[in-house]
Length: 134
Image (cartoon, rainbow, N blue to C red; front, side, top):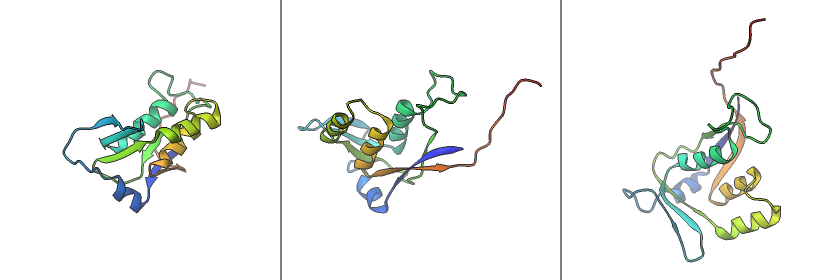
């Protein structure tokens, strides 16, 4: 099955570890209007990717759609909480370059700006084939 693996370097992993352990997940804006995610989990980023660019529950999930991406997998290995910042300047630059809002390649560039990489790969998965009788 084709998939996207969300990865981070060892240095990236250490810088992403939350600075406020034990507190609840929250998003705050700084004075430059950057969105700072505190005590997040890697699954929060996976959720954003799936919601925006993967197959969603509101669509027929068994049908291929050209504008949707295959599953996103956590290949980072961080088990604790993380902090990351969505930089407003980077978002504005991405949007002005593309004249569109939030394409998958734009979001991929954004994810890379806070220390992750998305690598295309394959994963063996069990599947079920459903078809009409012949």
